[in-house]
Image 1 (tube, one colour):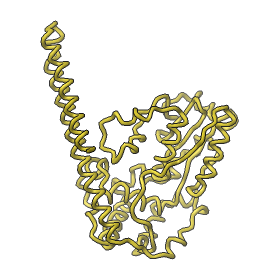
Image 2 (tube, helix red, strand yellow; image 1 turned 180 degrees about the vertical axis):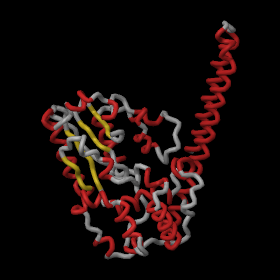
Image 3 (cartoon, helix red, strand yellow; image 1 turned 30 degrees about the vertical axis):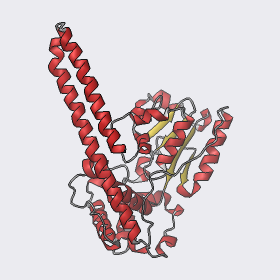
Image 4 (cartoon, rainbow, N blue to C red; image 1 turned 120 degrees about the horizontal axis):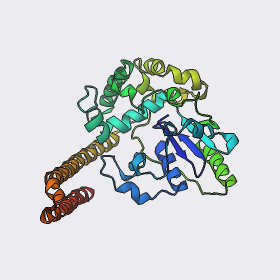
Length: 324
């Protein structure tokens, strides 16, 4: 239950399933719970944008997990006690396609340069649709083989991560029902005397729409096997027919866009690496002088403070140049 977000003041419990509008939902809940938007910008991170920092739990205030709560406190969370408990699910075939693009095809620094650096199935920068489809199929083969990415939250079974045997959901919405979810959440806040004008800005978009070719050559069957648990629980909600009825229409501009995103994310990875090295250097310098400070060496203490200021200024300068 580590993927739960508990908002005690608003009596809201949200179970996060990545790539199911979760960035948009979190920004909405950040506003509802009074989070400081500027606070999300203060972390040294290799996320693709400021907006993606909303996923960093350490930057949230007063929001916990069910897994951190006592059994007695968890037992109080229910519709009968005035809580709104929800999650959003999505066709796992389209979810996997979207997640692969946002995490691997465009070169997300967290995934391509850290979590899965040097994985043999990482995609190239595509020149045409054929490159995209070939690399996508190699990735699905890795999922089917039980390779690393299938254990990542973006690619794990949704049914497994919902913990329905432990969490008393008011409702589990399908992606097409987001407007209904907003209505229900708004009504819940109204009943609590905490009305909000709820809005969900589009976040973390993916460049290529799915078409029939994305699921050719056995890919469809592989995905349906990988996510058999999702289909057993929610399969009645999903119809891939409209997607399979259309051909892909990816043009040269789409490939150029992907290449630009990859280059952008490479530079973010560079700046993050520089920032980490500088922060590590500052810690090493402080540790090296700590003994002298401990015995009352005032000049050494002043030097520590000055070095800290200089390193922090250098990191801010590097990041500032990267944004420019």
